[in-house]
Image (cartoon, rainbow, N blue to C red; front, side):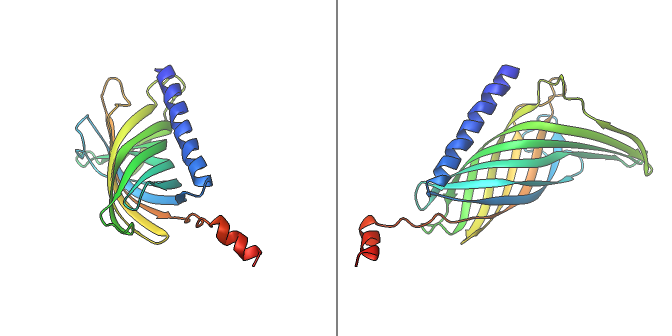
Length: 222
């Protein structure tokens, strides 16, 4: 399992480096991405909500490599907070599970118009790696336990997710509503999976327009 995780990390890092190289070549819109979402942990039911919603934040960077006016590839590197919130009203007990991931989404983005501005759909996969986690239990307002997960011997810190999104872009700004569900359980026995619905905001720097060499030489040598 560790070998698979290492190979997947190398492949994801290579993909991100390719995206950064493309960005440097001036062919890509890019910028910071911030967002907030609600998440839960289900027992393997794909896109099925369980229990209460846990609020979490995400932050990172997004590269939008346009293949043409309607289709582009999204490369992202994000730090996202997920988990679950379970309340037992009868005994007034709350269990909050917090899971923090580094994620590398790779998404296909399709504009709904010939003009690249406006509505778009997105779909793709996400590789995530669990950085840390904590579970806090309270009852009647009193803390019963607050335990940080020991990940030193955990071989299931990596997960793969499927994601779909609907968004709108206008000039430098982009907003996207994205749902994602893991397809590789992070618990070998309980077969639990992460489900998150988030609202993402991105500010995009546009690539510099290409300058024709003849025009540039004319500008310097009239």
